[in-house]
Image (cartoon, rainbow, N blue to C red; front, side):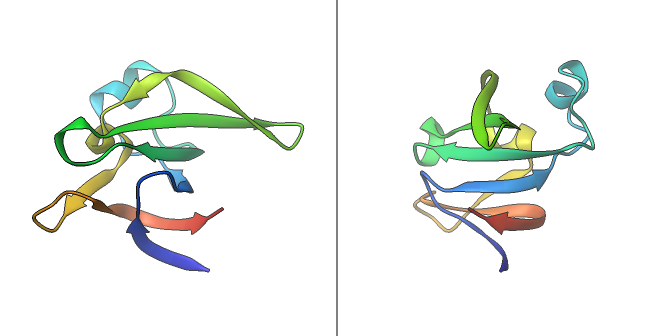
Length: 88
């Protein structure tokens, strides 16, 4: 099922944008799993690679906007993904 909404704790498959951070980490344009952690101004996005059916963290968490996740609403507890995603 495809959706554009992402909530804290949820893991989604995302085509990463060509942001400065993604370019530096050499993952821009690649499809990776991303977990949104926290809410509002304290939110971060943890990137994961999938190896042997398990999620393996990829580097340190980055800002949601760098991973293509954008806050919607006034509370910042819900995010929207720039491209299509697949909930896990």
